[in-house]
Length: 110
Image (cartoon, rainbow, N blue to C red; front, top):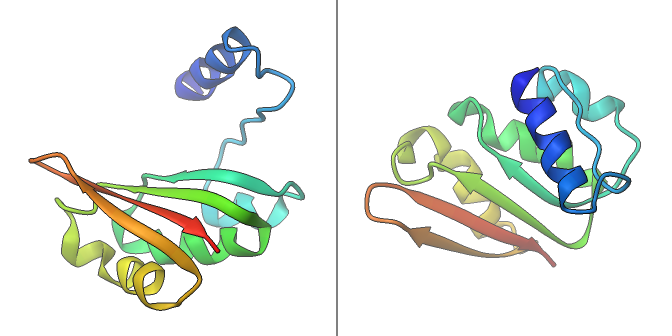
């Protein structure tokens, strides 16, 4: 709840309070219940479930949506199915950003 409230306050301070909504709960249970479409998603949770999170998100992503997956360097083995999907499905333009100790994969839905 603390982080959710922090996100709400930051969105409000940025003038995005009416455009940003925060849902709290297990993502794999909450995502199917959401009716909104998304133009941005940050995946930073149980690494071995990244692909499941993305598959839950995909029907709700608008064309051109940006999906950022955190910790793709440090947890390479755990996120491999996710990386194989975004890099090999032909649905995304994707690039990994290496920050030395860790990486992020930034993918844009075509």
